[in-house]
Length: 117
Image (tube, rainbow, N blue to C red; front, side, top):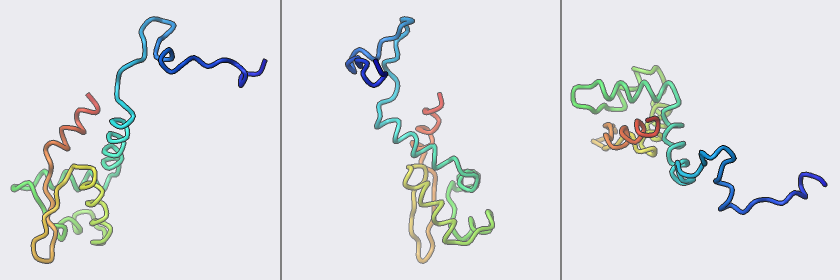
């Protein structure tokens, strides 16, 4: 008999463990996908520096024009990194005149912290 011919247990029975500890629970697939998106957003050194710099400002926000000099990258590249952080729910964007300002989203940061605890 080949392994491909072996019977497969129904999904409802696969959560049981031979050692009795079980493997049910944990994140749903959707929660894991959302969490992975958030973790991918912060898994870049430039994005971590941007988050750290914004957090360190007195008002908790920064203009993209100031952030480009900080990381030494062109404005379009910095804007891309900031967009990823906004889409992950870690930053909010506010357009003021020709510049975009970014501020931290406390709930997004709490969610990132919660993934790892």
